[in-house]
Each structure stands twice: as structure tokens, then as C-alpha cells.
Length: 380
Image (tube, rainbow, N blue to C red; front, side):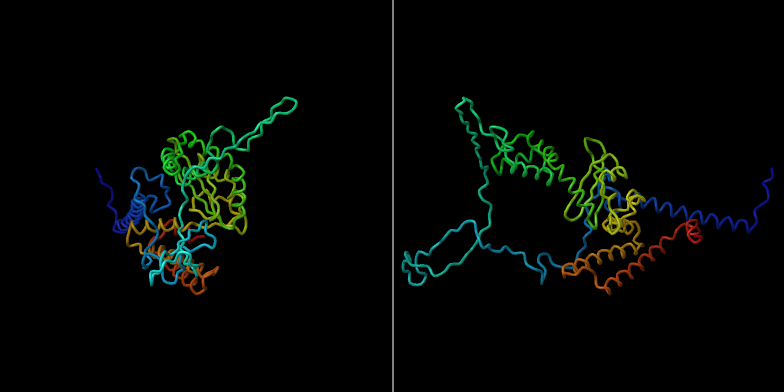
């Protein structure tokens, strides 16, 4: 059998060039896949629910500022100060003169030194009895006074302890049994587990009007932050969505992660010109339906992803540089706010932006687009 004509030198050289390009593309692809395998919620935008059983240890994005712990020089103090009107006054008089020992009983004082102790009052349940008196009319009818709103049983717990219970359950995620133990230890109360567990539902019903008002407040805010994370509810994956400002937080639990759930919340859909939505860049937030508002990407997510690049390959020095610039910018903003300014000094801002552009260009140089993408971009 004939093996056919042997390829020429030029054909072999061209084949080597093609294979070298293919190898370079495959190597880049393998490196990218290896990088993705090392991603989790601490070094990417992946939600914590995707970490599975191998959940990474928590890692703070804060970095050492080179300062000692505690109050910094020149910072305003936060010491406890006396009040003008104390709740109680206890007088202490000297018994005898510290000089000659003369008894001072009956001697008029010439002044005093005040020392105030801030403490909790004795903690016990206060029982208020409501007596619903009956009156007999000349016609023979006995009429009983109406009970105040919320006084529905011969013996019941009041709104203050109910509010504290909901605060422990929801604000601090305290389990029902531990909440019951706290109430017993602090106040001698003994509410049932059923009463405690039922409070959150009743509180949610009473907050219906508040929910609508909160939604309206968020719709009018200049900047609103959005996020979503997966969690297990009754063994099933659900999505907890949040829309918030520093003064208000709206939670929504949904089966969906994307636009359907975002539209149900009704906040992002209502934002318009002059307002900004801050989020992690999840594609649903970038739908054209939300283009009426401005968009800003969350720097906390940027920091996690930059840390992921730096961990994958220390040669990506641009990633560490960008992360450092984000932290430096935040520090500069904090200093400006503390000084009462509403913007950065133009020199500082220009320097940050210049160094940021340089680091971004270094990132592009270290990660050039594939030949096909580069050719497509150059032909536009």
C-alpha cells in the first residue's frame, strides 16, 4: 500500500503553527477550568449555598490598617457621661471629720460630688389587672365594661414581652427553646413553645401595612442595594432576595432567583433616572427593563473575585493591585466623610483613577482575549 505523498517542509511548519495555537487555547481553557474549580463564596460571586459540605472558613475582607486596637489618637471619645436628671438619688453623708474626728451629725453640707451608676432595674414581670366592672340598670340588665384592645384572656402575656420574644427569634435567630429559657432566666416567665413560635406569624400580619410603606421608601431612595442568596426552607432550595438602604431592608422569599422574583418585590422596577441600583452583576439585574436606573457593581463582590484571581495564580499581580486600590478608595471616602466632606479631593480622586486604569490595562495584558474574540473586537 502506498502511504501517499509526504508533506512538505512548509506544510509541516504550518501544521506546527496551527497546533501551537490550539495548544495555547487549550492551556488557557484548562487554566480557566482549574480556576473555576477553586471558586467558592469567599473568592467569587457564587452564593454561600453553592459551597456544599466543603464550606470554606469565613474570611473578612478587612485588612490591617497599621493601627493599635482601641481608640485612635484624636478620635472622639465614647466614654459614659452623667445625665442631668437621674432616676434615683441616694445621699451619703460623712459620719466624722477626716481631720479632727469631730462627729458631723447635724452639720449642714457645703457641697457634694456626684457619681452615677448605670444599671438595669430589677427584672421581673409587672402584672396589670384590668377589672371589668359590671353595673346593674334599673331595668334589670347587667352591663360589663368592655376590655381594652388586646386584653382578651383572663391571664396573658403583654405586648412588651411579645416584642422582645420576636426580637430574639428574628433579630438574633434564637431557637424557640432557647428563647423560652432566656425569658425564664431573666423574667421568671414560662411561655409555651407554641405561644413563642406563633408570634412571628402574628407579627408578620401586623406588619402588612409597614411592608407597603417600606417598599415605597425604597422606591424613592437615591441608592438601593440588591442581592439574593439560596437557602434551605423545609428541605427545599428557596431564594432570599433583599433590597435595602442604610435605613430600610426589604426581604422576599421566592422559588425563583431571577426576574420573576425581582419584579414581585417591585423596587428595582420602579427606579428611574437619577437613582442607582447596586448589585453583584447577576445577569437578571442587567435586563433592559431596568435600564431606567443607573447601575453600580458591588465592590465586596469585586474584592472576592480579585482575591480568587490572586489565589489561583500569584503572577496576577494586577488583581492584588486592584483590590488594594478598592480598599484605599474606601479608606479615603471614610476619611472624607469623617471630615464632613461630601466628595473626595480632586487630586486624590485623579490619582486613584489613574492607578486604577493602569492596573486594569495590566489585567488585560495578562489575560488577552482569544484570537477569534480579539479579531471580532478589532473589526468593530
